Amino acid sequence: MRNRCILSLLICGALLYYALPELKLHGNGLATYFAWSWLTLLMMAIAGNLAAILYTPKRKKVITSPMKGNKENKRGYMRG
Image (cartoon, rainbow, N blue to C red):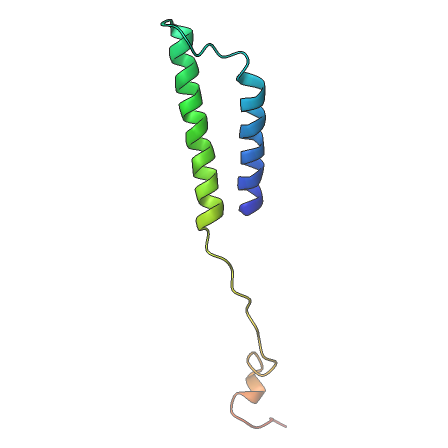
């Protein structure tokens, strides 16, 4: 999950890098509204991926004892 979010962030960065010089951010036309809405959606994607990375609970290491899974040792004696 974490790797997918990092990959998505890298893709968002690449999209921003290539699209920003082409977007018309000043003016009153349809292109300006598209540019600002596209940037808003991109920022939402970035924020969602960052939240997923930062707030994902860390996995605890599970330590299994050799006695835990063995049915013969559960009662404290070995079956013959």
